[in-house]
Image (tube, rainbow, N blue to C red; front, side, top):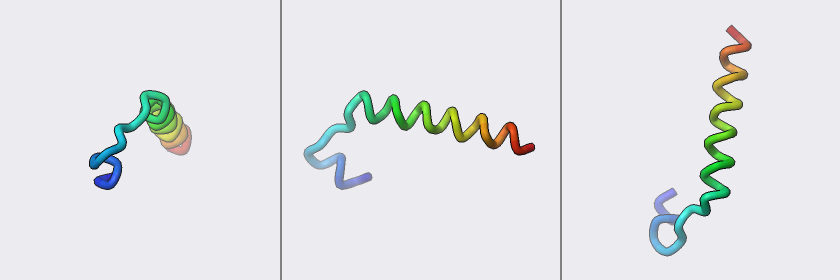
Length: 33
């Protein structure tokens, strides 16, 4: 991720996708318990 910090800023869409993916992963982990 350090390479992105030099001259490319993360797009809001990408961050939103990451956030939703993390929420999905958390939900899956809850279901597996």
